[in-house]
Amino acid sequence: MKLLRFGLVSLLSLASSSAFAAYKLEVGSSLPRLTISDTHGGIVKDGGSWDSQSMKDALTFIVYVDPDDSELNDALVERLREEKFPEEHFRSVAIINMAATWKPNVIIMKVLKGKQETFPRTTYVFDKDRFASKNWGLTPEGYHVLLVDRDGSVLFEKAGKVEKNEIETFINLIRSKIKEAEGSATKTSEPAATDATKAK
Image 1 (cartoon, rainbow, N blue to C red):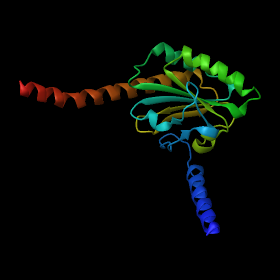
Image 2 (image 1 turned 180 degrees about the vertical axis):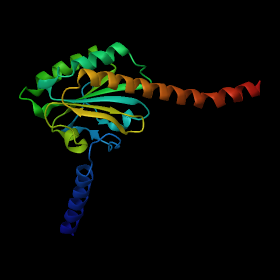
Image 3 (image 1 turned 90 degrees about the horizontal axis):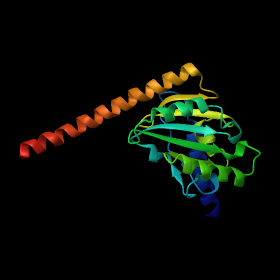
Image 4 (image 1 turned 180 degrees about the horizontal axis):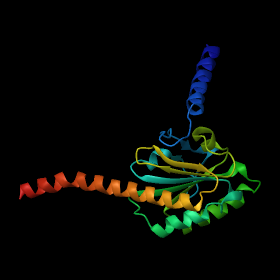
């Protein structure tokens, strides 16, 4: 009986791992759901679990970063801050690859807590064992940039530095998607407004 249970658990674990391993990160694909918690990491602010479902219904800018390469895409990050995109339509998540650096976790966490206070609009997540890299096909070292649509599909992905000409393309893509989201919100509210008018 014990052997049977062990076999079932092993098969379930293998099936789960295979599902993640089969995922290929590319533009147009949908990111599988990911939860970073417990031994894998969590949210910097309170140590709680981070669930990718929290990105639902908003355009999300994600960076997966080796702390040693944290300044690689500063030009892109600063450009995004200058734009001040509306929070209801645009969010950002920084997942820190703690396993990619020689620096002690305690020092990195201190720095991250400071960043979380300075940039409250960004959700900082710490990944202790490359969990996001393994499950989403992200670079295990360095810097990976993603732009994920409201439905979870990948709009942009690049490992490494986002060049100057790519930054403008990236910004224009965000503008286009936010305009699209605002248009959808307007259409949704129109029937309610019409009904209220009829009621009068």
